[in-house]
Image (cartoon, rainbow, N blue to C red; front, side):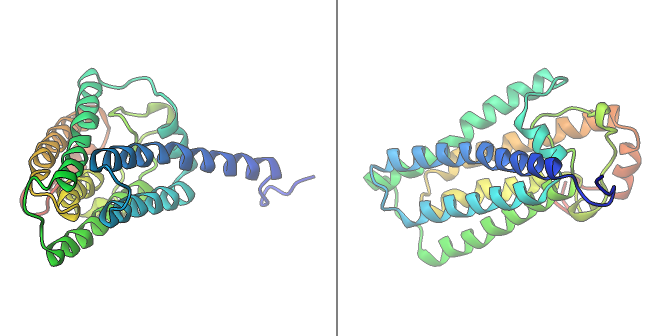
Length: 237
């Protein structure tokens, strides 16, 4: 008979399979990013692009192995209850979010704009790392970090106040905001900054809409907004 303090072997295997599934699902956007970057650049010999893909891959693996298994299930299965406006914003963000990579690849291939200097690229890469650390920290802290905006009543959805949520109400979006703006600079493309700014604007809109939804539908969230005043950027908004 198995002791209640010792995980059942089948449970351990199921958790391993689930986390592996999280890694596989997380690799899909990495592969898509790589395809857009290298096809538009016309070459795979692009160190900056490989650095970005490597960091994203590491983040996917770390988060998939350390976050709540509930979150892995949430993010790898289609969930009911998503808002229509959010589905539209997600489609728009996914489409527009690839444009900086496409433009940067074409810029690299044809030399459309002057290249950004190496020290500036290195500084952007440091910001990129910090952005992914913040994004990953939010996911590991918040087991309700869904791909879609919805109140997860079936899981006893509660307000998360620990980790990075002590500083801003939407640290995942804050990290992604930094990532999106740093990415074209790392890739050395001034031109790609334009679609990156548009993508960042969509992130701001989604943050605002999600915050309003949580205030209206999630018990305790209004009180949380009085404790943590800023949505995305401390001291600004």
